[in-house]
Length: 240
Image 1 (spheres, rainbow, N blue to C red):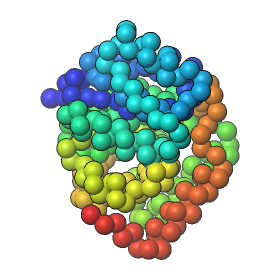
Image 2 (cartoon, rainbow, N blue to C red):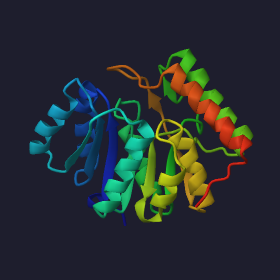
Image 3 (cartoon, helix red, strand yellow):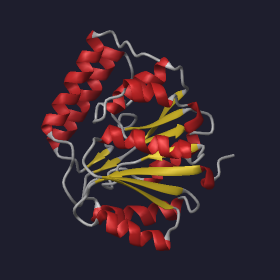
Image 4 (cartoon, one colour):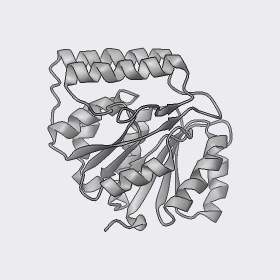
C-alpha cells in the first residue's frame, strides 16, 4: 500500500513564483504528508524567498538552491539523488509552470503500485494539450514521431510528468548516460529500458502556461531533436 509519507514530489524551478503560489498548495491538498522538493536554478523573481516563507507553513517543503542554470535534466537528477538520500520510496516529477495537473499525478501514484516507472503521456487520448499554441503542438508531435520511428517506442519519452519507484533506479547509469538538458527525458527512458525496468503510461492532459515564460526555446527543441537522431544513429548504445 502506498502512503504519502513515502512520497516526494520534485518541482524544478526558474522564475516560477506566481505558478508555485498555486501549485504547492494543490500538491499539499492532494498529498498531505508528501515531501515537496524544489530544485531552483537561481531564480530572480523571488521564487526562493517565497519557498522559504512557505516552509514555515508547510515543513515538508525542501529547497535546493543552485547558483546558475544547470539544465532541466540536471535538476531532475539532483532531485532523484536527493530523494534516494532521504530514503523515500516514490518520486513524482512535475513541471512547476502549472502545465501538469495534480489529478494526473494521482493517477501516476496509483500506477506505481505495480510499476518501476510511470509516464504521464500526452498521446493516449485526444485533446490533451489544452490551449497550446499550434507551433508547440506541432513540435511536440514531431518529437513523438521521431522517437516512434527511431526507437520503436510508443512511450511519451519527452514527458517530464513521471513517477519512479526510487529503489529500482540505477542512479550511476543515469548519471553516466543522461544529458543535463531536455534530452535527459528521452535518454533516461532508454536507460530504464536497458535496465529492464517495468515502465507504463497513464493519460495526462497538459494545460498551457498561465504565468511566466516557457524555458523551452526553439534552439533547445532543435538541439534535443538532433541529439535524438544522434543516439539513434549510434544504435542507442546505452552503457550500464
